[in-house]
Length: 513
Image (tube, rainbow, N blue to C red; front, side):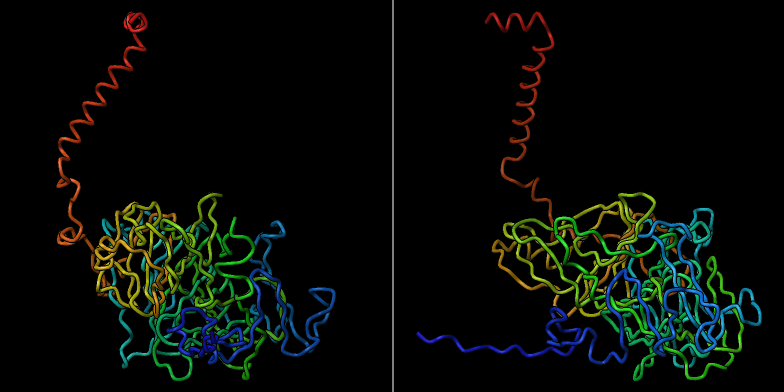
C-alpha cells in the first residue's frame, strides 16, 4: 500500500482571507507591507535609541545628556505606585515639550467630542432599545478632514475629570495631520483600523496600522495620524478609558499561553523627524475640550528613550482562540484580547474582544449564542467580511449596541438552520471576516451625533415577523395542557403530604397508621 502524496501548504498573502496569521507562512512578526521595525513583548520596560550610546548608562538624569539633548520624563502613575503598577518613561530629546509659545483655548474644529457622560448633561441620553449604525459617512472630497477634525464621540459612561469611565468614538479622515500632533491628556486610546492603512507617528517611534490590527496610545503621549501611501481615506473605531489602563486578561486554567500572547504585541523604535525646526501645533484633548500649544520645533525629536509608557500594536489575526471542544457555548470572555480593570476587583471597566475565524466543534449543542440579557453594554463593529451583526444591514464600517440588560440574540437564517440541523459536524466559522466588540460593565449614554448627527443610526426594535421563524412550540406540544394539570395536581398532593410534618396531631395519626 503506497503512502498518500505529500500535500504542500501554500501561503495566503491576503490577511483578510487567512484563517490565522500562520497561514501566511511568514517568518516575520509583521505583515509584508509594514515598513517599520518594532520591539516585542507586552508589559516590558523597553528602550530604544536613534544613535547608539545616547541612552545614559546607570542613571536616568545625567548632568549633561549626550549630544546636548534634554532629559524629559512622563509619569503615568503615582510616584509611589507599587512596582507592578508603576509606569513612567524617560526621553532624551532635542528640545523639551516645555519650550513652546503658549496655549490657545477652545480652538475651532469639526469634530463632535463629548466626554461628560453624567445624567445631568442634557447633551447625552440613554437608548431605550438596541441601536444600529450603517457605515459611518466618509468625508467628502471637497473637504480635508484630518484626525483632529474627524473624531466623533458615540457614547460612554463617566467623566474624564473624575478619572472614571469610558468613551466610544469613530473617526473618518481623508487627510494627514499637517504639522500638528494630538495629545490626549484624558485617557488611553485603543485605535482599531477598519478602512485604509494608517501611518501613525508617536514621540517614541512609528506604527503602521491596517484593518485587522489595533494599537494603543497611552495617555499623555503625542502622536500624529497620517494616511499610508496609496490610501486616500480611512475609518476606524476608538475606545478611550479613564482611570484605568489596558492589560492582558488572566488565563487561569488555560495556563501560560493562548488568547493574545505577550510576544505578539509590538512597540516602536526611536525615530526623529528630518526637519526639526518647523512650526507645529499640539492639540490637547483635556476634559473633552480641544486646546492647542504652538511651538517652533517638531514634537517628534526624541533621540532615545526607555520606560513602559509606550504605544503598541497587535495583529488580531494572531489571536490564539479557545472554545468548547465537547459541549455547550462558551461565554464571549474566552475571546478577550485586552481588559481594563475597574475599581471593582471582580468587574472590569471594559473588555476588548475578537470574533474571527475558528473551528466550531461542540457536540449535542445549539452552537450559536443563546438569547441573553447581559449586565454589560456591548458595542459590536465589523472590520471586514460579513460580520456578526443583528441584521442584514450590519456592514463593515458601521456598528450596533445593546445596552445593559437589553434582551437580544440573532433571528437570522443561521438560527433556523441550527434548530433543524441535528448533526453536529466540525466546521470552520466566521471565515474571511473580522468583528470586534467592546464590552463594558457601565451603563452608557449616547451623544447627539450618535443618535442623529451621523445620519446612519436607527433604533432596532425587534420586528415581530422574526417570531415566525421562532414560534411558540411549547403551547402546541401534544397534551401540554393535560401535562400541566397533572404537574399542578402532583405539586398539590406533595404539598399536602409535607404539611403533615408541621402538624403534630396529623403526624401522630400518620405514624400510627
